[in-house]
Length: 526
Image (tube, rainbow, N blue to C red):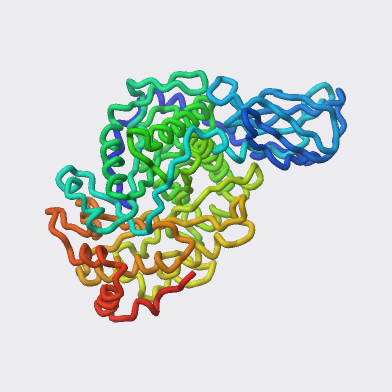
């Protein structure tokens, strides 16, 4: 999504912008809701049957002899919230509270903190933690369509889509983007947690048709969820208001109570809708697009990496719990771009620094099985020889950029002990967008798409490689990026037949001939 696209709509009203500008939120000084004197540790918050069980260790005196479990929203810091349970002070206290999924008193999206009575007021004495196994209350667990890594960003115009070229190409994955304006302020009624949300269903019919079609082709579907200008106000983070109309996408709203409510509801709605029961099946949900490049693709003017990441992590947690509590087998991804350790620009955060901060926040508040979607574009984007040496790329963790030729930098990074999933597994990486222009020659593009496939096939930690795109985009062509396997007139380029048979050693040898180098020698296996 490097190019401004057509999803942006009419600006929000002048009254909305002015009122929001006058009421911009102030970030809390301590985002995790802990205190320096904390001496109780929450070791786990899990769903067990119809309840949530919170296990703690450590002793702190309380004026009433009791520990108080406070359940707070993502935008609150204890003791803000609701005192949901009390137990006698002990060195190993356990709390049990009803989950109440689907009711106005649900605990599904809450974070829990132990408080004690001190000076007649509740004061937090523990870390804060969310539920870490929302899948335990899921409605379904779809049989995942993990059938291979080869993917494509499909053309959705009727004439091209009806050709069913993803199947012809042998693709096992496709990827779509849904702006939240497409479900905003609709006529449909969706009851969730005791409230009625008016999420649009008529406009989703096109997505329903496409997702079912790709499923029938044997393709796994990934869905990118983004906040566009036309999304209803509750979806848009207040730290985005000063940039409305100036950016591609905006931050998810985990600041206001209305935002907290609607994010959980929307995530639940989409995961339920696309759980293989009539409207198609989505296996993977990607939350935002290139979110570290905040000036373009996830605009939130938070002032620092720490505050920005806290906002994103809170929203991600809400979306994760909403999705996994409907479809237990869905994967949920954070998305970064190719700027890895690059320093110096004001409108983005380096991907590595962002991921360190994100992982720290998630782990401190309850580790979950998040995944990484990254875009392995070349720098500059018009470079169609991803195997060629570049001054902006190296094979160390300090490389300014990542691309296909050094993608092992990212998967090695994810292999660190501190980044492992709750089960101790390496979190998988999806190459969710990369493409190569044919404007420097169809032969070079053909070699590049084969090389891209070879890189993905030789790295066990990569779970998919989505090529951008099936058909040229006129807006991208104007910027020197004819990345399609087909021209705008539907004619096929040389890269089409090469990608179609990218697994074939003979095609790989031909691609090496076109590249002028043995592509196998440019692969770093993992």
